[in-house]
Image (cartoon, rainbow, N blue to C red; front, side, top):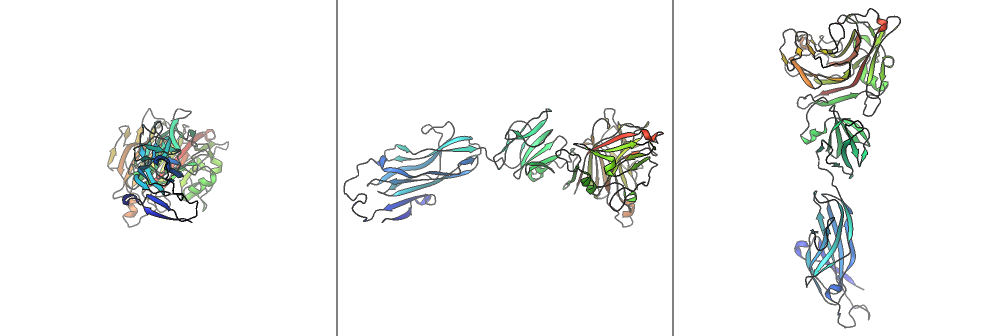
Length: 525
């Protein structure tokens, strides 16, 4: 029988490079070397591979460390000396003699006794910049005469490594490689805008993409409306700007409105039945919005009919199923006249409320005479009448080129409060912004209202991401003076018709107007 012993070869390398000596014993007349005849084989013939080169892993991402082993034995009766025992690699296009040389470490010389063996264990870290493709790995040793003796080759595939955290693409050059070695790119889609591909195939539905980023091993896209979506479980899921984890988040709303420090997206309601929608059914709509304000709804949030009429308006707000229709990328509040001269329409009153907020809605108003679409901030019973409005009535005195932005009670913003005006098209007399090149009825636009309750309070107004004005305003200020906080602001989207501002229709049965609502996003601390 034989017994074996493992000893360290050289102190600096004893962790990863070691000798395995197989010592002969008196095992009968046929034991190696027992004839007493000298072994006349050359040194180069005597050292042979007994354990083929083994590499882990065989598919190697850039930046990965590869471990390899190979075993040699001295089959002669004389000691064999190797100046170096090396496991090495050659990149695509390289050669044994011409390199470039990528040697695993450690590598060292050794003297191997007759019938003894040696196992070489070494590693190599591939740089993130090393070329991808098929690499050749093999073991080799240099004999005492300086000649190299190469072993059999093993071929491995070096692939692009996982992209660094916070990698960002803004165009069609470059790619993002995820942890599963999938390649993500931006390519031109059917409508000429950028879409997201993964391994050359469209990644679900995407459109109007302006950024692709990789954060915390997740791929996310930003579209032209500054909405963010992450690829989760094989589909796009809406999220807030993931770059916050990188310290590079813009800290902005979807329209690019800057947010106060520490604020982020709280609720994202994107309406429609198509990809990316978050509210796509009446059930989901009921879960997030009441059909009427507190004074004209039941305990289930449903409108009581007839409504409590305000402002002398002509419409009756009905149930969602009767007055709202879903399309692929929006819902429509349908204002309709009827033969009995009644007008049915709809209101959406948010369940969500917040003392501090930026609320941002994207919608398209009707251009029908006496329409009074509004996107406004109010509260339930118990408030002091504080109100922050975006109103766009259509009548002889105002068209779809104008947006009215009043702040009501206790300090009307046109009654002495300081107003900082950022757009010369805004006039504070009637708190109106008018732009002949702007038409709210021909395409959707984005309206953002931000309220910061800190200190004296501040309201800031934006249209399509551009700041129009800001002014001091304190929610429920008259209640605060008496030590009462009062209800937090809630948010309302409605299509009113007629009333004290635009005036009433003489023939209500003829009314036909659509308020198309694409999204409402709520931000806060």
